[in-house]
Length: 496
Ligand SMILES: *Cc1c(COP(=O)(O)O)cnc(C)c1O
Image 1 (tube, rainbow, N blue to C red):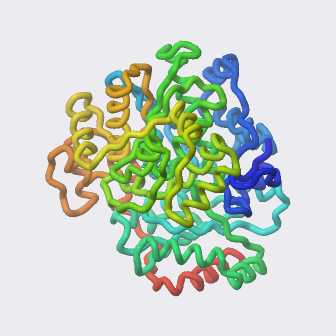
Image 2: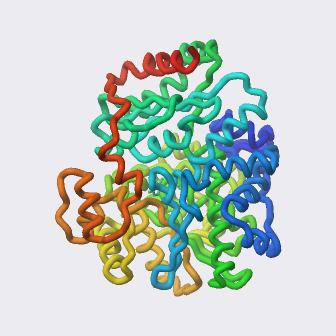
Image 3: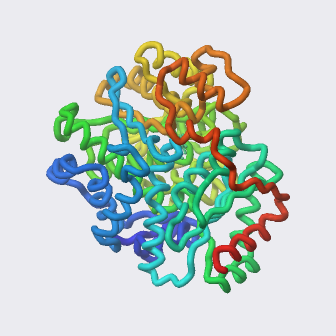
């Protein structure tokens, strides 16, 4: 299987290992598989008999054809084994008449673990396969959850180190503590004075800095990133959609070939794109409901064909979905409209802040997708309603999905089975969840966690519970101008 860029016709074809090492294509586009492998009904029946690790190795094997079955099985076992996740790693529960796919039982209690636990192993193998002599240094700017999930995934990985910068006043206390207590001899965590944009532009500048490149190169290092435009983060997400369908077959909740609609709380469009690829592979997925919060740029896009980022940005109680540029949408646009039109849309977006797809493209998109959104008030009401009516406690992001799934069923009159992707533990957002339940919110975040437990009776994830008494390893706060020297200093400790 080869990979091509979303922005050039006849772009050079690359192997999976190459694109996982490389991240972004030289023309600024994202890498996509040249064609989508197909699963027959018999294939799906065979997958239904496997456990999650076997399914992961089998599905990834169709895309990462330059990796052996043994390599993928080992990577999946390391990523999803009992020391990282419960068994099975993904929990599928029935709530009212719908199915909720809980993707957050990993080490950091958020769905990003599903990809970030396996990606470091895929990257280490990619270095070997591409004959890369240098080791990778992953550089991350984070406003919270991604940083911790990346640290946890890359800690003690082979031939890869990770350095995370976060804004000292821009993340919650729990998030700060999660990062500051990170173990692993190949990790470095530094707070910077400033906001998330300062951290992000600082990291971007370091990526483009020749002096840094040369200094690292000399030491046998190169910079790489862990964000969701990398194919190595996207591919593992396809697995849980295939797996969820298999699981519903196994439980006889679906008949072979029966349609399953899916709702995904969406930010950067990575998670829902993985679902689309599962559908293209032949998994009988019907409509995909793209669920947004008050930042409803994608709702407007799927309804009108116009993607317009010249609008107000809102900070919401579902912060991981607060986004105006959903990078992975580019992959969908390529798959539906082709490289030429896709490159045009992206050019218009960066030059004018807006693009519009043609009617035939919008019609095609609407065969598979529809967009709904949920404002702050409805998010809170949904949390309370699900808890009171079904004794189901959801986090704020999942609540957006639950609400939008309901709206879709009401307005589209489609009562096929519905799967909702659940993306974080309610305890990751304890203050907002408590307040949605009409409870007073303690000032101190760990107290809010305890209070939510008293109110709900739901088990606190073990790692979150132990966090309060854990000792911090990293406490450095620097000026943003010092980020570059911080990277060079960390590089010295890696290659002593
Ligand atoms: C990252 C994230 C999302 C958005 O996922 P995308 O793949 O970026 O669309 C939703 N919910 C939570 C909790 C997240 O961390």
